[in-house]
Length: 242
Ligand SMILES: Nc1ncnc2c1ncn2[C@@H]1O[C@H](COP(=O)(O)OP(=O)(O)O)[C@@H](O)[C@H]1O
Ligand SMILES: [Mg+2]
Image 1 (cartoon, helix red, strand yellow):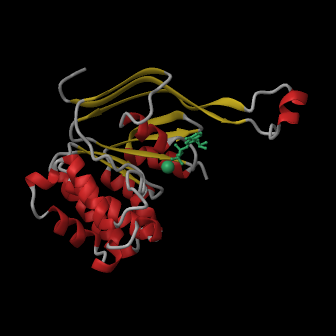
Image 2 (cartoon, helix red, strand yellow):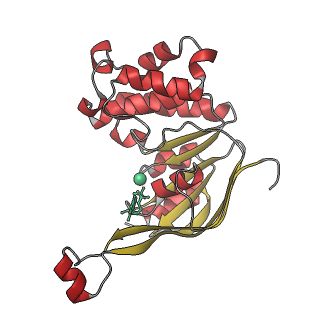
């Protein structure tokens, strides 16, 4: 792997066990002679290389495998076959709210995740920075996360992930749930992080944002990477799906 490569996936295959449709009871199991679970391919033969400082857009319909791909890159999911090599650090908050503990309050989640990153030791203002960026009130941050709206969860998750000074920023549809004010603020922050030369993995259903933020992109369809290349071209391919 060349020294300027930060992420490399070679022939990655991921499958999940899913409920077999039509098998709901012991009687179904005996009479239909089918297993209650079947293996479903979620990512098929994916090869991608991301260079340091690249912003890679990942586009595709709902269920095409975008979040699964991010989880595989992050090492949360182990591929059935193929290799994943990552030469950098990233915040362990991937999708909206994944990584947050819903029974804990916003403040407790912040403290827990900062301790996990080791950020609190390096930056004593980390909690204030997160609170300021999220614009969540003291009252909201004192509530358990399970009582948050999806927009509030996105604000908290994204603000925490920014506090971690990692090499790779992973953004999975954060902009989709935030209100307009938060979207604009996130976009501004993403540009700033990009200008710092960090690597960004950006999943979004807004092709205009992907084309603007990312230099490269890939298009997933039913777990297959059907196009890869320049983000403007790939976003045009994505628009043509509908
Ligand atoms: N834990 C899981 N177990 C079984 N199937 C899953 C699991 N997570 C995701 N899937 C399936 O994998 C496919 C891709 O999901 P996902 O990666 O979340 O897609 P996207 O982010 O593109 O919307 C979907 O068909 C989904 O039902
Ligand atoms: Mg997803």
